[in-house]
Length: 288
Image (cartoon, rainbow, N blue to C red; front, side, top):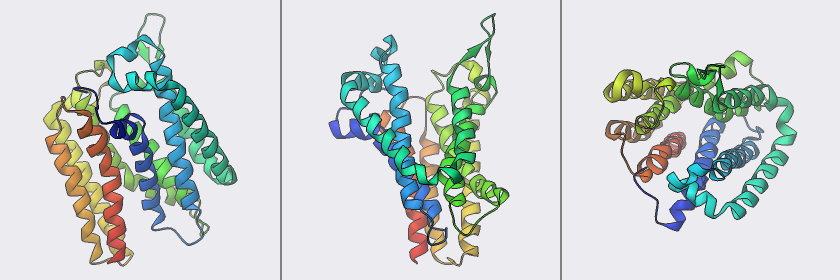
C-alpha cells in the first residue's frame, strides 16, 4: 500500500472487509442464478458473507495486537477500533453459525476440508533448522489455494444445496469453472505483493516476472469467460450471454494496468470489485 485510505466510509468498506464480504455474497448469488427453485441460496449467501467478514476480521484483530501493526494502515485502523470491531466480528460469526446450522449436514463435507487447508496455509511450520515447510513452501500454491477456497465456498456448497441433487463430480466440475477467474485475480494481487512476498512463496510473479504473470492471468480470464459463455449458451441465454464479456473486459483492463506499487483503492476496491461486476453482468445476461 502506498498510503492510508482517508475517507472514513472507504475505510470501513475496505479495511473492514465489507466489500470483500459483498464479493462473497455476489459470487454465491451468481451461482444461485442457475440453481433450482427451493435452493436456500439466499440464506447461505448471507451466512457465507458474514462468515467471511468474521474470518478476515479475526485474522486482522490478531495481527493488530502485535508490533507489526504500526507498519500497515489497515492494521493501525483495526488497532484503533479493536473494541468495536471485536464486537462486530463476534456478532457476524455467531450470525453466520446460526444461519448455516440447518444447512450444515450438506455443507460440512465441503467446508471442513476448505477450513483445514486454509489453516495449514496461514499457519507457518518450520524444521529444526529453521527451513519453512508445509503448504506455503509449495510453488504457486498461494494463488491456487485462494481460488480453490473461493470456488468451494461460493460454488460447490450452494450447488450441493440444490434440492435437485448433483453428484460430487458434477459439483466439483461446476466449482472448477469459477477457479480461473478467482485465480487470475489472485495472481493480480500477487503482482501487488511482489516486493513484500518472501521468495520461498514462489508466487507466479516471482517465478515468471510481472509480464509473465499478467499473460497467465489474462489467459485464465479468457478461459473463464469461454466456460461461462458456453454455459449460458446451453441454458438458452443466446443473446444475453455477450453482456458477460463486459465484466471480463473490466477485469482484463485491471490486470494489464497492475503493478507492484498502487494505492489500496486500485486493488482492494477495483480488483476485488471484479468479483461483484462479473456476477452483475451474468445477472443482466439472464434478463435479456
